[in-house]
Length: 84
Image 1: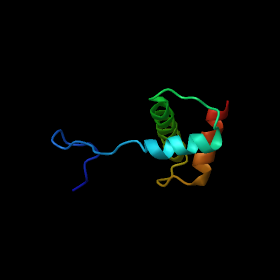
Image 2: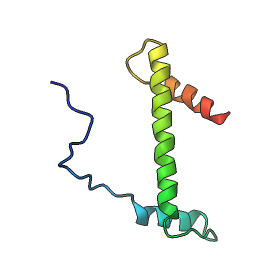
Image 3: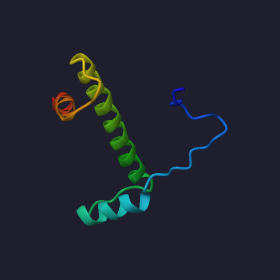
């Protein structure tokens, strides 16, 4: 029996964005950068959306090549699509 990819309605997702880590990285890399209170969450969301789009495009590339496993070449080809 295959595992379900959806979360049941009874369970609540307890994962939270690593806000402290994100703020610390921003301060180290760009100390002069001033973000609003939820700015770190927007950056985290943007990264998650990018990874999701990259995964979808990589999966499409793998299917076009009739390959069941997404490998490095599929990911690099998907990343080139986003450069343009």
